[in-house]
Length: 391
Image (cartoon, rainbow, N blue to C red; front, side, top):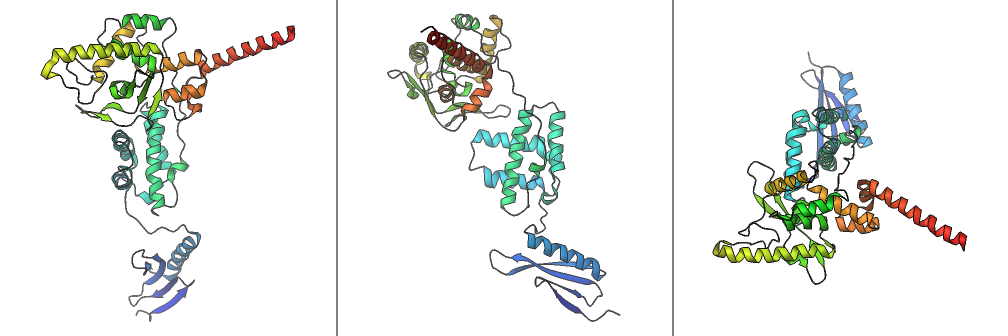
């Protein structure tokens, strides 16, 4: 026969009683509803009093420490989708959104998507990193995806769904800085000679002399070229959706998100003037078929933007002809920076010219060049002291 119901207060925030059916029930006030202000209570059931009281005490202890979480059945996959569309989408560029989406779909969800968010631990996150590394992905790629996951879980933490970020308990693989391969001094005149008969002559030369990223070069409008002051403002780039048959579009910001104004050598503007003449001739030939709505500097014969893949193929053909088949289009940008440093430019100026976020990043990327610069500085300092000594 069931005992008479027995109700008992516990720590002022919980109570325990035996129900008419003989089972024991503990009721704990775990917080207040943010909308109504009414208390939110959680019930714990058991056949005997001791384990029910133990669970209630543990919950009260967590509430006192500020570590208690209301049970939440949301999975990692569900939260990542909600975070991406609700919290991230309106704050990031379309290209960044696609990058986040790819990381989540290809690497994070397959490993931990089915796990409940509140059950996620550092060991689970570590498995994501380990799986990516096992696939042969670079440390940089792992780091980029780790950043996406960390951001998503940081928002979950702010929303009170989790009490800590599991990413903080996982170890990322070491990022090995890829050694850059700029054109050597002997390569540069060969390169400029090899592009003379190329339809992309002016584009390739400007890419080299202005140190532009490929997208910045192909998305450069005439309105940002100041021939009188010898300046170029870099504020947009040509991009393509990262999917099969993805459409081209103009992203109205650079990689850093901020426009930059540079002053490349006068030789750069000689190529730009030649391109302006070439484009004017093509416009006359094209007649009504000509269309350059974006007012782009580098276009095909009818005014359309250049295709990134075709541009790349022409570049590879050129560098192969001068014995540098390993070179990438981005190496022209590296070449511009190394030439500047070798010419005596200070790192801060190179940073601004290249559009890097920090001078330390510039130093890290071009460490080999800056080392030569330090040797040159030491030689000049030595010479100065020798002159003083003679005097």
